[in-house]
Image (cartoon, rainbow, N blue to C red):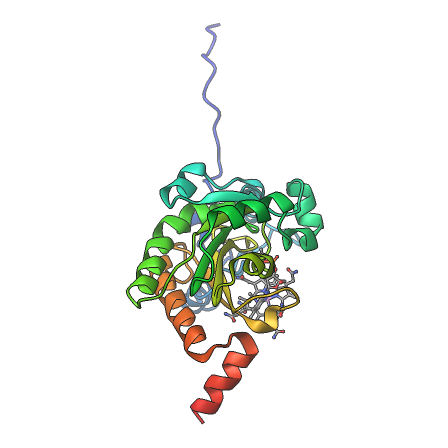
Length: 271
Ligand code: B12
């Protein structure tokens, strides 16, 4: 009897992350296939996936696990030094010791370490009109994928409007509220933080730009604005996002207000 060579393993399930598989209808004999297809195309939510008896299909489960893996990589990944070097960003830390603590103690991610305060004080221009900072937040992938695209657009939009910019830098293990500590040192009119959003099970590299008029200790999100879901993977296009953030900053400067106060000022203007 001749011995068969060991065959390469036969995988009978296609890769569930491929676009044609991800968007394939899972419902057998749908009453209105076109209607269901339109519904599924309108959302990234996991609808129309079908089921195997009372359980999810293997395909759905594998896709869920694969997407979950991507979110873990985004949360625990690191921002690439090459991306920071492209814009001469130096790095400072918050009071968080490691990534585990970052997830458990959001309050520490809102405070700069003493070493960070010293470094910022030594290296940064004071009292610019706009201070840009970058934070990893909850997705390093957001910074790695979007910063090279958004930063030049934002910088261009602000400088062509004749605005003075501070010295930009990167904050590791950052939360949005850290802009209060930043501005205690810098004294800018507006601080904007480009930060990684909490990854979803479909898009893991979305960036947000949170900004505020003269942030200071004690100020809350009610005094901030956000442009969210900035990504080339199905959110606000990163280049357009950069232009929009520049416009928001100009509006903040013009009205000397952000968040709820800006909303109140602009809604009374428009009647
Ligand atoms: C988590 C989250 C929350 C959490 C924040 C708690 C926490 N500690 O994480 C809770 C449930 C409290 C929340 C509440 C609200 N949220 Co929210 N939130 C998010 C979510 C899912 C992720 C945000 C994120 O990843 N931030 C980055 C991390 C690193 O930041 P962080 O420092 O850990 O957390 C801060 C921010 O998340 C900030 N924040 C959260 N939501 C909002 C909304 C606004 C307008 C501002 C200025 C700040 C802000 O609050 C946290 C504490 O400072 C986004 C969805 C998205 N695609 O971004 C929506 C999102 C940002 N939230 C939104 C909204 C509308 C709100 C509320 C105004 C809802 C309401 N009507 O009450 C409130 C405002 C809360 C506030 N802080 O004043 C919208 C903003 C839309 C827009 N462009 O203006 C988003 C985009 C969801 C959506 N698609 O509608 N939110």
